[in-house]
Image (cartoon, rainbow, N blue to C red):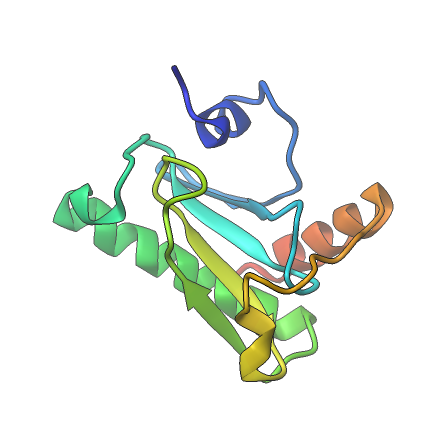
Length: 132
């Protein structure tokens, strides 16, 4: 059975897309730790990030780097934090979280509640800042 992320990539489940190329997809986390919290995934479904082949792994992180650069241009923050946990959805993914403090990437804290309009506006800002 396809993961929820594979279903998002195929368009079966809607998302707030930030960026996409032939191999990778980035979209806003619908339970964000911070405004702009983005998930970056390979389109090819692989459960565990360290099971991804070297070329795809490098490509995933280079794609995430481009997304993070765009995020930093439009989301007020000190840095973009990165987390790879991989237990909540069995499809390799990277969390990119805008940080003002080290505590902004604590997954135990309450998630933000944003409206569909707010999600769409944030996604459009990040997407508009993508270079290359």
